[in-house]
Image (cartoon, rainbow, N blue to C red):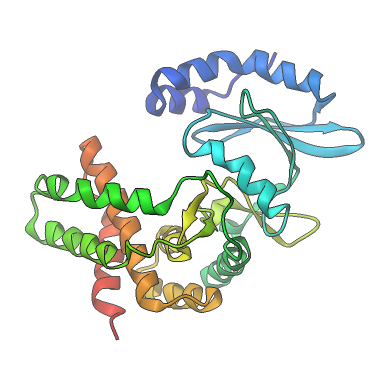
Amino acid sequence: MIDVPVGLVESQHAYAGEAGRAFVAALPARVDEFLERWELSVDGPLMHGVAALVVPVVGGGRQAALKFQVLDEETEGEPVALREWDGDGAVRLLAYDDGTGTMLLERLDAARMLSDVEDSRKAVTVIAELLARLTAGPAPEGMRRLSDIAARMLADAPDALRRVADPAERALLADCAAAVREVADEPGDRLLHWDLHFDNVLAAEREPWLAIDPKPLVGDPGFDLWPALNNRYEPQETEWRFDAMSGVLGLDRERARAWTLGRVLQNALWDIEDGRALGAVDLDIARRLRTGLNR
């Protein structure tokens, strides 16, 4: 049996509650179960993030990776999206178990992340080119919808903003809500990744870079730009990054601006709900989008 990494245990206990504790407790036996079921052998050190365990494996003459994570609203759409993309810009799904959410994925090079690329403009361009491919087609039925997310944000915003003590921050978030309100009646129908930041892009043999770990939903591609603005934040690069991604994806600039402000609002509502301070980087992104992109 494997030893569950301490970092994963701590994060699951802290953020996933009872479901996280149950997930961690079941992991050793679950790993053994799928190694046997899919005739695999462990082929390297275990890897993990905040929410998932990844086990490098080999079987049937090929290298692959087993991914284990808690099944929830975000993760249940991952295999659907990966099947839809079928390796076009994203890691390829080789097998999936509906009952546990266990995935067998093609092996990418975890030692070479896009975050290791020193030139942030090159990294953002890679993100933009991947997003252009991933969001090129309509989403399959039954996935989370941006329309529902936007409606909840707009419903929750008035009460939440009253809890923001700083008047300038409150006004800024009110502007974010107003921007979302302008575009909420056209939420889009594309398949979105939702979390394509630099650490979620790995090198591969068959392509230079591929996306991993989607939290997919149906919506406007403008809602997918925020991670590459926030990641490795460089304030003076905000407008360049936004323009570069909007251009590669062929997006309407003002609609993309509004949906990016929507991501800031979404994060702020989570912060307010959890009693955390508002994210300083997000607030700065919102200020720059609000004042620098209306031209």
